[in-house]
Amino acid sequence: MLLGRTANGLYWMSRYIERAENMARLIDTGLRLALTQTSAAADEWMSVMRSAGVSQAFDESVGSYDADAVIDFLLRDPKNPSSVMTCMENARQNGRMVRTALTREVWESVNEAWMALRRLLRHPVDERELPQVLEIIKRETALIRGSFQGTMLRNDIFDFARLGTMIERADNTARILDVKYYVLLPSVHWVGTSLDNHQWHAILRSVSAQRSFRWSYGDYTAANIADYLILNRRLPRSLAYCYLGINEALGFLADEYDVRHPCHDIAQAQSKKLRGLSIADIFETGLHEFLSDFIRANARLGDQIMTDYRFH
Image (tube, rainbow, N blue to C red; front, top):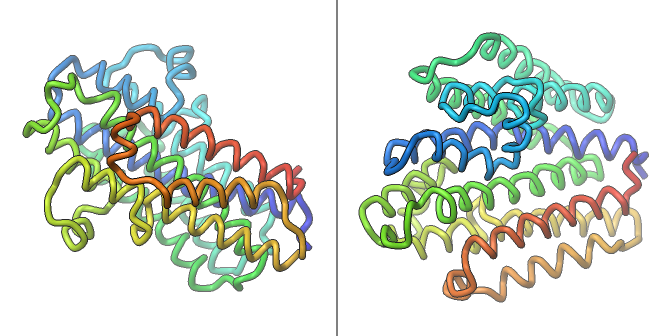
């Protein structure tokens, strides 16, 4: 059985790597949606910061919601605990702590990604270069994920790392959806218009799901896109898929250690809830309300996993 400290390092290494990529995706979402702005640009970027959960830290540190300040805060500000560079620093630190639990390829990919992004983000990023920078961030984190998937033994080390990835990914997909539908759509009067549809397309692109959506659904409607990102169990970034992965990893840990914890019941209940919903049910009760509840429940599950497996 892994020591809690080792499990903690694996879990948080994976969460921080996923968070770095997800922050790039959230910035990409804001950038794409800003192209359809119908209000002040500052309001749009404020919405992104609120969704990222860092608006309070930004207000205390910077306060001016212009694009350059927001982008710099999300990419490289050390005062932002969720900035891309802070996440990569923390991922490397956790990876270094559990280096003996990782294959050489995984450790080297983490270290090389950290070095590459440190060079890339040494200076503020010009908005014209931002799309290319975001693609590099996503590529570097994908290389880590590829080396991890291709070289790691499927044991408890793998399971704790996978839990970190899936908890973080579920949180981010919910936040990206929330940026679009609750915060950035200017008015309910825009629902179903070309502006609404363009923003939904931007959401699909930001999670690399536009082409696969065309394979699975016919029409680009809000209901279909939301269904894809929330309930479709084949999309790697959907909420339902993330919880399939969470339950599978927890199941392997239960078998490995021959013990079940409260986190197992919480995760299974959340999966059952997702399976029992239709997108019509979610829209009827309110997409923002559903996503807010999901984000809180997902965070509680993460805390319960750390408690049950004695992370310290």
